Length: 517
Image 1 (spheres, one colour):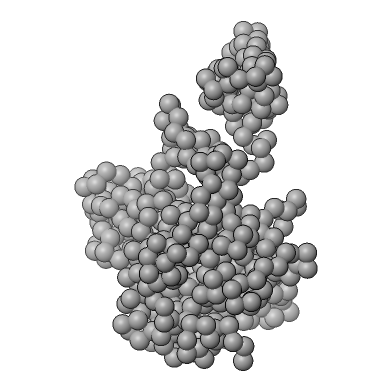
Image 2 (image 1 turned 30 degrees about the vertical axis):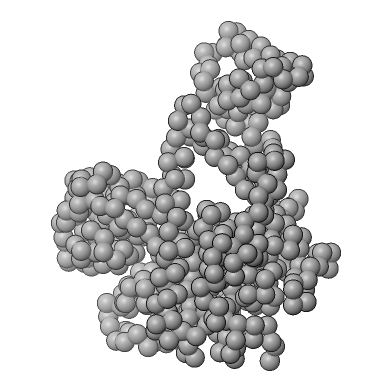
């Protein structure tokens, strides 16, 4: 272990008393005696280490280790010291934009390989395609590069260029020069109108453009014939509180409470109330959630559920019900500090805590009950419990055995899966988009796995046929027709989406979504 880390660990307890060393040293002056004594004690230890330890130490680094130790001891993963780099990354994530070439890549067989060129990006305009292998960047071999290294290379000042050498198949080699430009990553991953006038859209994050994108998408779906909406928030980790409030505002009448925050400091106590008229009052709505739905996404689901505006379907959400404030520091870094918790309109706490950190469960008789204005029962206790539990809460037993037998070879299996899918697309195995995975594809996949010494017993492999067909179908669709089509295909075969769509097709009015068959 690094020597500085050893010393830093020894200072953790004292760091807690000192409240973070130089970070808040000015604050503790003038406070009560115990706080001053704690600060002086840590300062004394630090000075002794600096003067007498057998090896020279980096004092600034020591303070940082002590500070991080103190924050870790608080047991809150959302409270953290953000270095300037981490702060920049956080800001970039919140804005959902960056300067680069617009490539989505993966590492396959030791090479950075194109998964998708974002629409309208320099990469798409240059004709880069899924499966293209990037072998050189600015004259340097990319063999063995990590995704982080590739992304760093793609990004740079607006107007600057990056030279790439590309291998497409066994014989085609291309040289392209891409001029970096502003890249916008949409918060809406998929949108389509399904049979029966059911509109579907998946919101992947709550960035600073989510409300605007959602308005545009729903309006477009309505023009295309949508008479109801599935709002898919599964796997959405949240993001900006303001955007969660604004999205809920679109579906609720003016004056309705959306969420409230409560903390120890009076200034963080607030009630967020709908300020505008409901935009799509005639649309029945189903909200899809799962264990990966968190933060601002939970605020939207909870508000629409509490006000009887949407039926929530899926699995119980993550339970990330705390709010953080970002405090900028003098050295260009920042402190992310949890200062409040969120509560739904009915007063349900979204925050979920369990000592063993196992996922929140759907059925829990100890959960407190709340009643909506229509008399429907909804449950508290953390996270958002769906009105209808839909979808598997755990992987299929055969699927678990499949991946268990692969063990550390899972990445190699996924590589073989992708390689076969690209080969099938190039062979013309899917001449049109209306295809069904063939049993012969699974046989070829099995042969490739054997050749690569990837072991799964015959019985487990056969029992995993449905999973393998799903994986092959998705990858072949991506390779043959691109990411957007592959995403639409996933919607059509998603059993949770189909169950929500069936309920919405029967709904004539918004409240009809709560009527059982």
